[in-house]
Length: 298
Image (cartoon, rainbow, N blue to C red):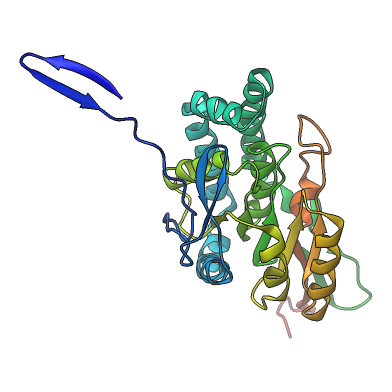
């Protein structure tokens, strides 16, 4: 507590401790369960199954509109996230250090996170040219294959790179039009929630990115069983958790994608193939119009 004398009045200023809440549907609710745990000297929401369901509803509600935006516009929004993150770089460096990251590594992690967002912003209107094709067929048809987003993706973020790991998972997922729910690292959740403050001021529609905090053991089975989650991205999970997720996901044919990567700068930490992992291949047949000798179709 500090005291400052203003004329004849003595003013007392209090340190206002930041409240870290979850991010669902573009808002910052507390967990409906009222539970919390302590990490990095902060009280963190302990998300429940109900919180997970709420996040899935928000993600599903936002998915069609996000997919419907032009690829160019999605790229603009990703670039805007990078702009806002850069403007708050010093805050993230300080927060990463508070979670045990060295000063040099914290600066590097923030820098690479900004670069990674710009990298995927550039791919938004280009990855279709890489993965789409016109297929040869032995009939009077055109045959096109294009990528479409899977829908709603649930991700487990790693603790090794509290900010960069989250950015490296979210960016390729949303680039193609997916929406996502990410469970932040239980040990290092602070920068994940502060990153959500960046998202809220970066033109990202509510529900496109949702972030929960809590226990992976508790939420893993619920995420795997949820019928409205189309895929699960794994990073920083234990072998036992992987076994449970893969077993439960097999029941509803949910795709499970392992992303244990070194998220430092360079390949394979960033790649259009990470975008492709979260897409479905759609093939369309279209009849070729036959032109008669007179020049008119039949």
